[in-house]
Image (tube, rainbow, N blue to C red; front, side):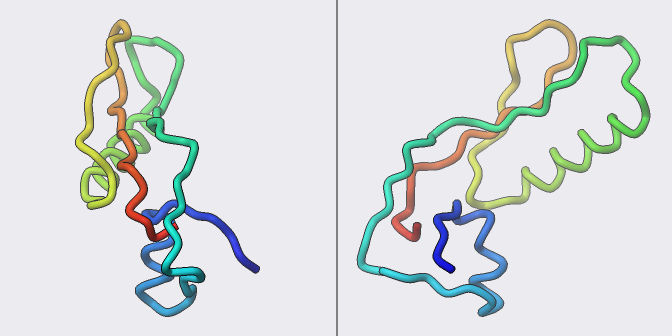
Length: 92
């Protein structure tokens, strides 16, 4: 089937030849230009499994070249990183 996916989610499959781009001359302008957040209840002591998940996601997402630089939320206490998605590069 045909789908519309953000480049960072399809990049691996495109590079491996598991997926092909259709309509390469078209520019797809997505209506979503937001961020991604990891939210949890405010607590002084995070459960170890949650701390590991947060650290893992931050480490992996910081390496992703199609995502912007991480920032911090203005909320109270520890806040997860926020990743702004770039404008469409015309691939999808």
